[in-house]
Image (cartoon, rainbow, N blue to C red; front, side, top):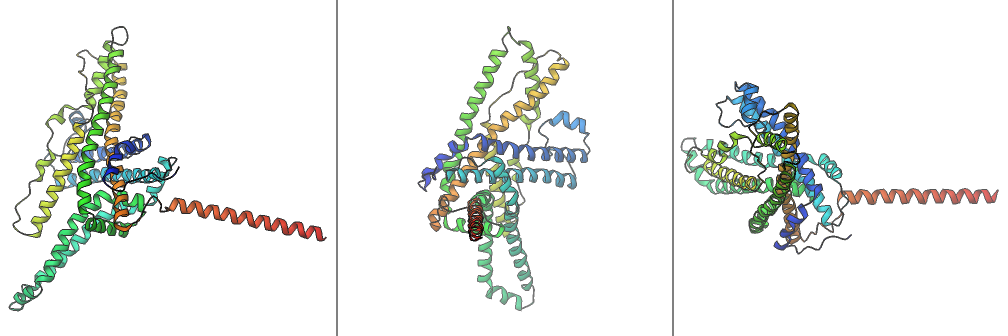
Length: 426
């Protein structure tokens, strides 16, 4: 198959929900989310125990969804908890890169690129996925430290005032670049998986591409996300409806008194109570944590306001996606469960958890496919570089292997002909 025919404009973004509806892509996100979730679960319960809460008490309160917010904890448990969150985020980013790679191959017409091939690629290119955002943060920190060093010159009596006035324009453009880099940081966070998955960049190349598309494609970044986010929510909502309808159909058939009857009520009710924890209805809204001290008209105020806006936007997007997940809750039975029903409920709770995770993974898949298509559009419009015609490292390796095989075949034929000629002369 040849490469997919793209318009290289906003119309291609509407392909994202359909391309994302792939068992291969959804499975990649399920695996990545499970790996990150397990690390988060372990580190969060470790932080709760370090905060003085007994593990049994914490498990009975939080169940599958532990959270340190709302607890009065010292600094070390918060660090442990932050490591767990970061591990889950990195796991999602690695999954995004794998899906981006699969999407590129699919756009090129290669539908046989497997999830294993995608993970092998991520294993070779994980460094820029992890360190690109850190590099941009270090650039911001460097400029802030550099500004602080120059600010010390202002304390020099008499000379400090003149240095401040003379170098003010230099300070201004340095500050302007720092503010611009804040937006580049946001671009880096969003597009690093797509850049690494499609353009095979290292850390410095990824940072350069982030600066480039932030400067050359700002309105496309904004407008395309006004398309991508709504269609993501619509796609997740539609998939959730089918998942919930299937769930209710099973309950209707198996819950009949002729079949399982009360057994289904007991097993499904217990499993649902584990997946849908009661404490989550009163959980802290993360957006409420965005209140920061007033830092007046300083660069710290700009950074804090920018950070709050980003956290608030991401939190709202996550809440919208979670609201679109199917409601698979079931009223638990009042009867005492038998040992077999309890064990069956534990198994079923894991299955229900995977079902919910599959819908969430589809939403992440739509976002990842959409970001990948966006980057392909950006490179075509800004650099006239069609990534669908560009040979990637896998194709170059195949060509090198074919060339080596052809060379070996020719060498064998030449050796065989020479041997035959020598035999005839004898």
